[in-house]
Structures are given as C-alpha cells and as structure tokens.
Image (cartoon, rainbow, N blue to C red):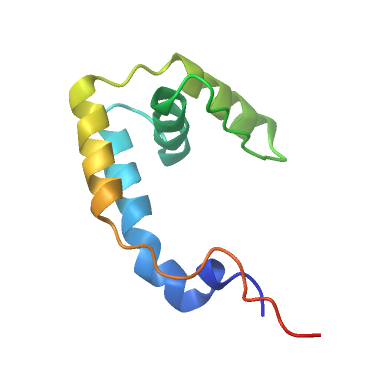
Length: 98
C-alpha cells in the first residue's frame, strides 16, 4: 500500500528530476525547492503553490523563491526537461474493492 510514486523503485526512477533541479539551481545559487516554486509561479498567474514545511529556514527559503525571475530560456529548459521526463508510479493508489 501507500502512494505508488513514493515507493523505492519509483523514487529511484524519478530521481532524475531532483538531479536536474539541483544542477539547474546550482548555476543560479538556488535550491531545488526554489527552482520548483519559481517555475510553478511562472506557469500561470492563478497557480498558487502551497509548500509545506515544519522548519523556519525552509519557510524563508520558499518565500525567497517569489523573487526569482526565470528567463524565457531558463523556462524553456525546465519545460523541455519536465515535458520529456517519464514519471514512474501512479500518483495515487488504486482503490481497493470493499
């Protein structure tokens, strides 16, 4: 049981996204979370990411992402990578019959 996308095999298969976001962020002094949030904020004006955290440092890190401006070329790079990446694992578990 559990969420299929968070099973060990799926995490390993999907780790390429983390590596991409880390490498991309390292070039700009950003964390993977900041890159992700800045990208989400750039998609549509009505997109409102709601990251969860229990650490004040992560909250501050997340808030800083609102001031990140991604260039058209950077957005193209992120969109191209994400669009071509095959996500492994369903988002939710298949409902079980009662």
